[in-house]
Image 1 (cartoon, rainbow, N blue to C red):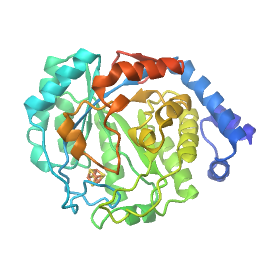
Image 2: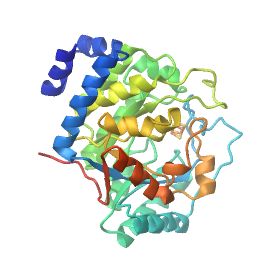
Image 3: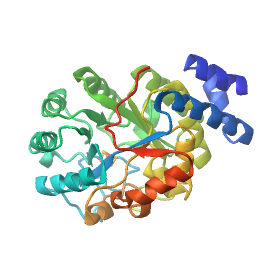
Image 4: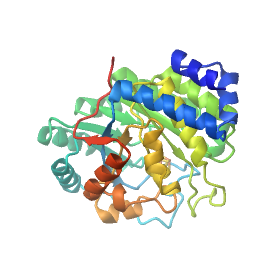
Length: 346
Ligand code: SF4
């Protein structure tokens, strides 16, 4: 099976049946160890031992969507909803800049009330911090609106496709939310000129290994700059409350495969991975991830931005504790850098 890992590293892709075969063997410790060794060396070719940090600002937990897996979906009446104002967002950027962040990620639900203000917020961040990148993660919108945000100065956009299988997509989302529109958004964003990020949950309800192979194939076709994957973790107020969380091993295995398929991509070791396991963050980095997104949101905001249960918001997850995160990364041989952290091309 190691020859398949070698082939994936050399060709950056494999036929679908071979991807599935590898995924079926994700619990094989020897194979996982070999994948870790190869994916780490591929990452070092492009990014050395550098880890990029992004300051996450969760600007609103209002959302018009009903994604069945998400704790802040529109149907959940138990959420204490909030929106940050422009000044609060700029204050978070100010704090983050002082700490060394050179990318700000503005993430929120699909909150159309903030749409009018958002281009001005983006422009103000770029005016105050011209050496920083602004990443947006605010869901599905019209091409014209994406263009307006890009013209205001936004550099990057994160929009996970979640699953590339139409039938699986329908099981995770209510009527009216379609895979077609999600994909339309991703290609519009690319076409406009954003650095685009996509990705999926590992272990979401009804997901099969075949679905995951199709996710890998879809991402290969899309060619995103950033790829975010993390384990599914249930939220108690959703209809998937009693479904099991995704597997740590499978998530790590997929991270390694993605590093081989996208050698120069920016891959976060996600908060969901850190929530699933105390060692999750470090294991993700050792598996080829090279981005961490500590939380810069005001405390009361991150407390109410719960996409899944027990989301970590303290310790190394909080931007203010950056020094402890740096120390943790140093202990495993990596270095956090003050840099916009754009995609490297060799
Ligand atoms: S996953 Fe995103 S779009 Fe879906 S309900 Fe949650 S915040 Fe809204």
